[in-house]
Amino acid sequence: ESGGQIDFSALQTINANATSDNRARFVYEANRAFDLPALVSARNTQFVLDSNTTLDLPELFSASASGNVGRWELSAGSVVNAPKLTQITSSTIESSGGGTINAPLLTDLTNTKLTVTPGVTLNTGSINAIDDARFDVSGGASFASSATTITHTTFITETLYNVSGSGSLLDLSAAEDLLMTSTAGFATKTIRASSNGVIDFSGLQSLSTDPGGRVRLDILVESGGQIDFSALQTINANA
Image 1 (spheres, rainbow, N blue to C red):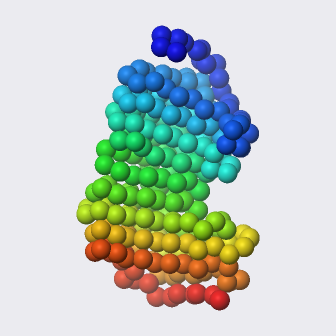
Image 2 (image 1 turned 180 degrees about the horizontal axis):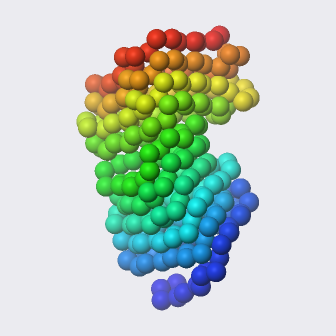
């Protein structure tokens, strides 16, 4: 409630169960500053920031999850400061109108869904681990990864990369190999660029789908969207 306070100053580890109804969830109200000064590891944890809220996580090293239970929900003017954070995995990062994540050592977004819209600022290291990650970029925003190999292994039918709107760019030009496989059952994966949005795969040389024929890859360009596969030499489409 307004004016209340909970002291978590000694909390170092959060290890919650991975279900939608059983996870650690921190909701921070607007126009205030909060911190978890000793937190080093957060598993299956959700952070929800209202507008103009600052969350300081000076010791946080790892934010992991299973079943994509982890969440980082930003709002306009919200700021997360995590100077030691290196990975956010199996999570969702999204915003309802802006926000900033300051995590200069962050390089790993494995199995994370990231939505980048205007007003969202990500001050991170070079993101070089994006296996099973999904990206949605729109409204003239941009995001880049330095990963040279990208593998998708989940059996879920989903859109992997969706870029829409003039000036919107998903820069995956460092990737040389892209592999789509499935751990169980058939899945359809989609890569989509629309409304003049751009996906840059200009360094990609090899594109392969599941050796067992369990994955279909749909590549869609709509309303002026562009996908650059200009260096692609080999497509291994297994049936």
